[in-house]
Image (cartoon, rainbow, N blue to C red; front, side, top):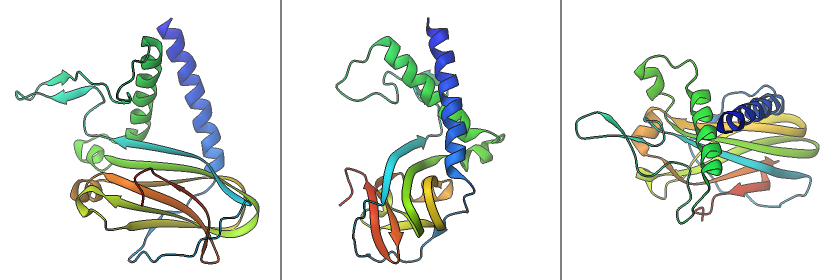
Length: 205
């Protein structure tokens, strides 16, 4: 039963990745901003975020931790569970398989320990839609654990954007290890210097 469930999950994830690749089209590398200036907001129904996908890639696989002797041991708390919930074994199996797949996907091609270290960190995928053609910029603003309230940002621009898109951002490697994990974030669509759509984390102020 579990083997059949895992197979169906793998097929579903493969289909999702294929579709997401279509959404993403050709994406340039994000630009890191030197200064993050506040922008006027005029939300517009022509633009909307449809979905946000976040993933934290850690140094060790979910459910494992290093003991004092250096050996890998199973942790009593599995990653992906919500505190205070008691999911069924079937639900837990699906969650674990999904997390394992995402981890393998992010680490694909990273052979050495150094390669893998450069992949560790926060990943963001934003799915958004433009109902009319517009020159748009997607900006991710975020705060990192060791920098407290300091806001950083990355952005990508799209000329004559219309239809469905997927935009990815990441804070990994030295940026992640030096400044810590992301504690709060906001992603916005910008047209002519004005925010026309946004998605944000619960912790963003």
